[in-house]
Length: 215
Image (cartoon, rainbow, N blue to C red; front, top):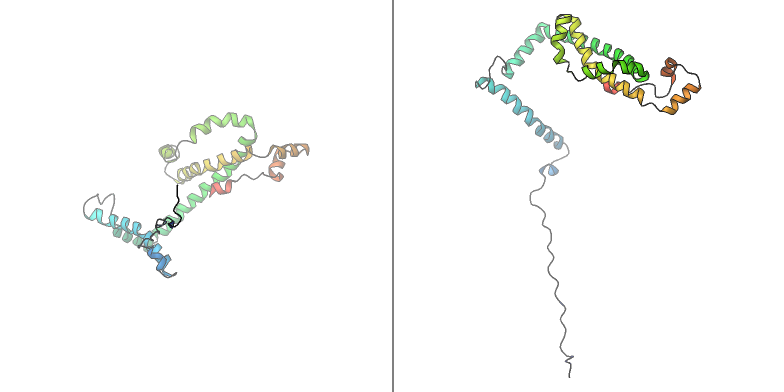
């Protein structure tokens, strides 16, 4: 038995490794100067708005929709400018803002006060819970005919519908805030013989986070 030691041993050649090829198409905005990038993004985001305005202008003119219900955008701008020059737009805006702020202020006053009572006193919550569950799921626009029928078409009904629409976020958030106060703080306040009004005034965690809900 003989062994041939003269034959050289050849090492296996490694297979070629595939090098990832970078896509030829690069993001074009990366090549733009820093000043032009925000401009390009703004133009890109404005395409949808421009398309909507174009459809608004052309659809009535091409008789795709009734001009009575959807006049062209240019006619809307002309009417808006006429109201602005005559002063009617400013007067109507002032009246709308007065109603909105009046209803909102009443909603905050009623919602916070009633929320404190419902969240703190269990008998008040048991008494008013059925009414809250009934009306909080009813949209304000659904009750608009009822408000007009009962209160008329004057300022009272308009302010009342704003009050009703703004009341529920403030009221429900106030109730939740009162019921989630740390019980340790309540026991500490009772040990100091603080009354309920004094606790609302001085106790930590007394202020319900109604401001975010009001916004």
